[in-house]
Length: 377
Image 1 (cartoon, rainbow, N blue to C red):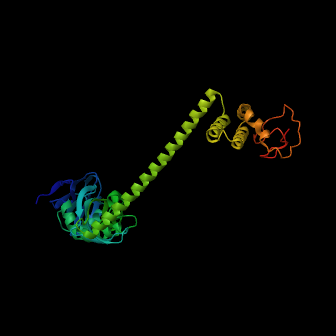
Image 2: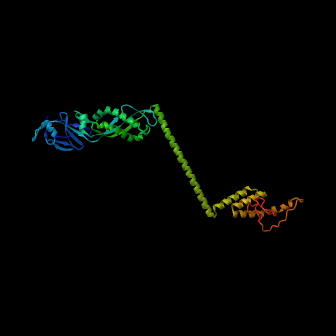
Image 3: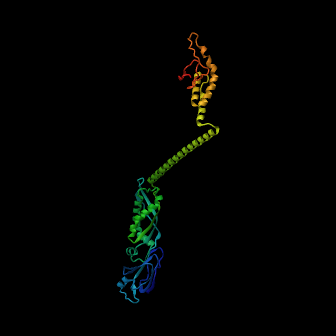
């Protein structure tokens, strides 16, 4: 095989590790390492020097380990036999994963056993190329995404199931609300799986749970699903009813305020107060309910009106007193002839005809009100 003068990466972006097909080089060969790459030299299965991004001339000065092992001569061009591996350090996304069988776990919310499946994507990046080459690659010429997933397939099936069951059993995560918590669930699983990948020099940069497969045909699952959504529906209905009740109360209160403001504006325009309005209302009820023809009821009515409003009671009392004067005066002749005559009392013409306290009419001979006992002034 011919000795190459230029050594560079010729793989694609979906490859983690690519081995250069040539194995014979000399100490004047040019090694080109791109950004996000590193190159590792192996001799007889032993890892030698590692090179980061840049252009290097392989000399006895920059490969001292190779010089000591291969006994390279100094000061000239010396051929040597070695293996060169290029490691891609870029984050590689879109690596699919999924459970091959259902995962058994106990739902933390309702406490019933469930069987679920899951699938999604993950992203990996090489963080320790030497560890990856020694522990996983070996003598393989390439390590692609598909081959890496093949290496980790059995591992993923076992570890993903365990991590999924542990994450789903965490408090606050229910099978019925897990779709809204997929970011938290994904990060929880990533942290649980990351140490296993780190043993091979890989970092699990992303781990996304994209789909949860529920046992829709399981009668137990259906029963708890209906119970869950019915409970949420009842709570939502009660909350709506409460809000409607509050709105109704606020509406009624606003109507009362508006009506009161309208009544106040009406009284202000018509020139009377709230107390005067109440006096008018009481006078109307008295006029409607009292028996005008009965003397005693008439007195009580007049007293009531006199108490609720001096101005209104006085006007009504005077008017009714004048109207009832003929009916009161003839009361004396109806007494029996044999009865003793009452002591004559001189009643000034200016004395009031009605009691100022209760409004009852005085007889001409009354010194005190027969209703409330108030002395006639």
